[in-house]
Image: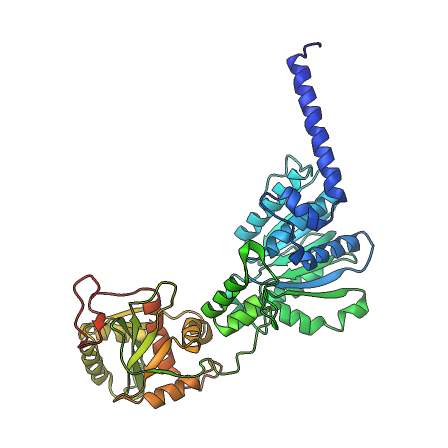
Length: 488
């Protein structure tokens, strides 16, 4: 056997590597998108539960070839089930089949778009797609065949691009708070209509994918606008909703990552009914109904508990006689492993009085509960009032109000509706009035009497997040003050 020179050996290795890449590319071009993913994406298994998502991209690819009608696809699935990774694999497989096509990806911001684009590029290169060496920008890279990938945040858009074969909008909302915002939701819908849809040509498909949040999110708006109308113009509207659980039997439909029946039953207990139907079932329900349902009572306080006082002021710098509210809430401390704590409404203070009189009432309330911390969500001129309160000896821990009432009340909703928020069976304060106003709360009307719910939400949030300070822990028998810096 003749010895090879170093140059000949290097040439042989290069030819072998080129041969391997060519074989990988031939294989990638021949495989269905769903089979491409486990072969070229490390750690991924074949996902038959996501077949409808892969089929959307297959139809879009065929339409770009002139083999069928382009699609407007509205795709939703539960959180963290692999929807986005399936789309990334499909985009890489698309470019493996036809590296001359150009695809675009839109996420809620530029950083996320670049992160997803980098992943798609890595998968495509692993499948043998040749990427131009001078195309190093992660948000826009090109293949040696003239195609490539463009990634943008939702505010960047795809203007100036022509000939796109696919535009994929994935998770345009950062979170539920954005989805609840009418202004943000309207802005996203306008971007899709005025920027993204205007970049279509005759064979371009658009895929819109996100977890469902509300009855008026982007998918809902587009479905209402296009259903029964767009088909007459040579475009197919495709709806793909993948609920995690069969609504009739309770059996899991998405079992990725060990998500079995027990997992979903636990999740349903941990989240609100609204979030369950929206996020996990892909079927958000209207919020016009009342938020809190039923009432659960207690006769005795728990053995050990932590207290917080939620306060809602109804003053301005000029008025002195409107309702102000304080809600004393306790969280039990001795909880069995695997159980969630219960919360006890100990007292509700609701007064129409001057601000000075209210401060005196609050100091007395705080003393009755051994220095429990007062918490408040503030906005506008309330900050000036709190300065006065501090100067008169009432310490208030406060933070700016964020989001709307429904978003802020979600955690309380979950605990209340699962029987983990209890009110006293009898008390010297107006329990029935508090319960009546709580059960009337929908968060949909500015005319609602919601100050008690706001104060309860504030106290519940403080206790749920562990804002427990010396003096706010007591015992049922006599409510002894807490030891400094520790539990009783």
